Length: 448
Image (cartoon, rainbow, N blue to C red; front, side):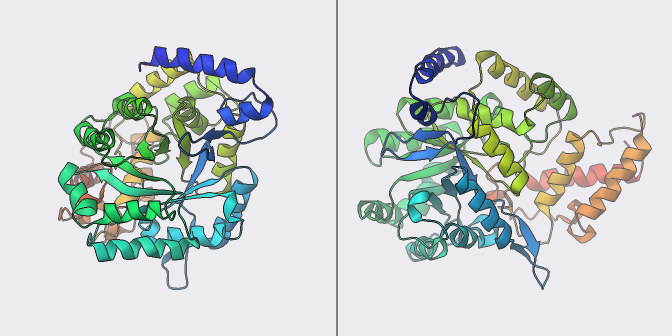
């Protein structure tokens, strides 16, 4: 389905919804701006009314404990979950792998203070390390304990795609886990079984073939989708989201969205792009453009946001409680912004921290986030001929030392490659660290 055909269809749907009763408009995903009320999408597979905004639990707020270790701020999580549920958010997505294994427990503590019928839990079989059946079943059962539940509303095979059929078989088929999970679904302990995808087009096609052949019916699929990756993914390690969406849409498979903000980069876009967005919508946040993009597509059941504090939570709720689909002209505008985004020398890091801990102590995401922030904010020293070069040089070096301790900086990477298989974005991490280390050394030596 191309964009023009989609707009014709969604425009007709919007008109029909506008003529429907108020409650029907709310559930259709199309609302007029007015009093706060969350938009819900109906899961055609089972009738679940799912909030279009979902809470991704990969970026809970963190604090230091007495021993200096990073731990989840449970009090802050409780406050955020309470606010989210009070404002209609009912979908919470977590994993045993998130935040070094802390995410599920924090989610379980916060959510179990509310009636179980008031929220949907999504979690995953994240058996990246020990893929034996024994270890995988233990991980699965531990998720029940951590989340204080006796069933999962949405359960995912976590991050399949890389390695194609062989990797999938090793993690889920040859060890008997897929049969086990299908048995758990039949027993009612899993209500919807799906997968999250990172990979290339031919790998995705294989999982669709499994569905088409009847070997396994996917109840839902989670994909990375945003206005940059819609048509500007690299096409080798990650496939364009417009293709993924079209394949799922024609099969009637509900879609949940991850990385609508590309790890926060689409909430903090370069100044020139932000200026253009603010000229069009001065009272809306930059992030709202990205969320409206995802919500405009009707097969999307839920758009996940990894909110780290109350401010982004409130802003996102505002967007989805006054949701307006993008027009064809606005979609074209975002395509222009995507093209401009690709011109910036950013590292495609979403700060998921799957690469951590580094065996050599490198703060990989911290280094990438600091570098990306400097590029995005225009504080990136590029050459000695640049205006304010000396000030920008000093600011970068000082802020880098403050953000990342010297023993954890890019120049300490030995290129062991341990991180490569863990990165869902397929970033050539050692190469990018070397690039940043070389940039910093050139800054220090005034060689730019």
